[in-house]
Length: 194
Image 1 (spheres, rainbow, N blue to C red):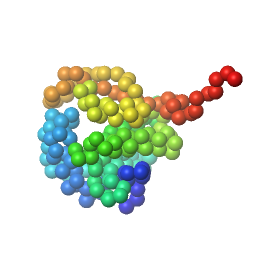
Image 2: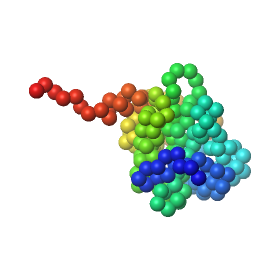
Image 3: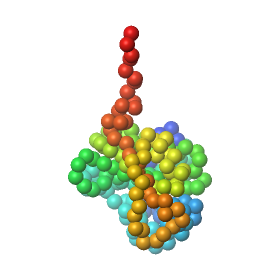
Image 4: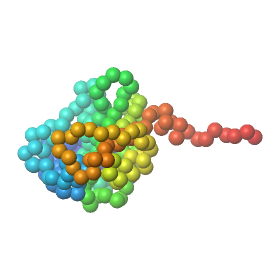
């Protein structure tokens, strides 16, 4: 299977139909789903008929998927997935960054490592102009990953969701990073006067 991106500890590859059992286990964990739908497991049939086709879909503009299965590079163990998907609309090329990892992969830096690598690839190889990411305002773990990956808080906003879940009264947050900001952070500091 072709690898889209490899880091020191991660391998990101396209999804296949054989990943359904991994998704059932991932979305079956109430803690993983807590900030997504209040902790309800996603029914396997919904994963098979709605979610897996979305993960397999290739963007017609790029020819690439927007979602990548994440595996531990050394063992091939499924850890979860990353999203790096172009958003619709005119203007500069904007991609949405997202991630969902198994609970036993939390706290090991995998989300930050994968997010940073995708951002770097986006700006150096894929022609991305802006990366955006969203989560619930109360999701401090995800917000921490966004900040460690270099994104900064843009706004807090409120949406009318069909179902209210714990913490939704605090709204959602959007983080972003532009190519210019990324380049400025990577360039060495200009020398001061001699």
